Amino acid sequence: MFKNITIAGAGTLGSQIAFQTALCDFNVRIWNPHPDRAKRRLAALRPFYKKDMGLTDEQFDKAMSNILSITNDWEIPFKDCDYLIESVPESLNVKANFYHNVCPHLPEKTIIASNSSTMVPSQLVNYVDRPDKFLHMHFANHIWTNNTAEIVGTDKTKPEVIEEVIEFAKAIKMLPVHLQKEQHGYIMNALSVPFLNAALELWANGVADPITIDKDWMNSTGCPFGPFMSMDMVGIRTVYAIFAQQARTPEELKVAKTMKDMIDAGHYGIEAGQGFYKYPNPAFQRADFLTSIEAR
Image (tube, rainbow, N blue to C red; front, side):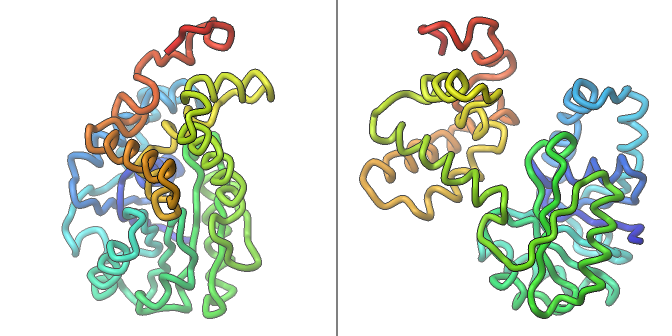
């Protein structure tokens, strides 16, 4: 079983993976270009773990003590790494550059996983120096409650590597979902991305505004979240990266630009305090949200 885990990239998901792993008593090191941002994202998890998981401040702080370093140094986080989870931005160039820089610093034993949401293992495996120890391990946002880990390798990945990662997933309280072949979006995003894109297209075509679309979906299906609420939770930067790649029509390009403008203004979801809703105390937390017409 792994002992020393390194998380590269401490954005929305990377920070969650790091903390969940530390909570389960692994030694965790974080590599992030901006260490202070990583620290803020980790601190922001405290109220969620207290509310959703019943963690006390003492338990949260104990888990944080298992995070041994947060740095942009290329030596410290990787020198004794058993398992590296890459969660850097969803750009092929960014990921390729990261692997080019990190591989010389990894010991021979290190297994590498990408948490990419939009790419498949065959797109990234050629950038690593150990294709037999490379695979993807994809997490859902809010991993402490949405606790799946989608796992898939290439035809070069050793079966025993897959098994080790499955056991690690169990050890950090995830449900391991082993895919038999690679699939863009894995299972979860292959189902959810068309749903979110449909919501964006309704908005793009002027059918309704985001809040109205959320209300209609929630009232009609009984679902506790609407698509735009979900996008705020996932992070609009991630949604934009996926949507912008396929935007073709003038309406779609307009929505892509609107999301880019939101991101540039710092309005990229819950973490930023604003996305399609304002936080804390967003409109959808009002008791009359689903029945009011004027809520915004």
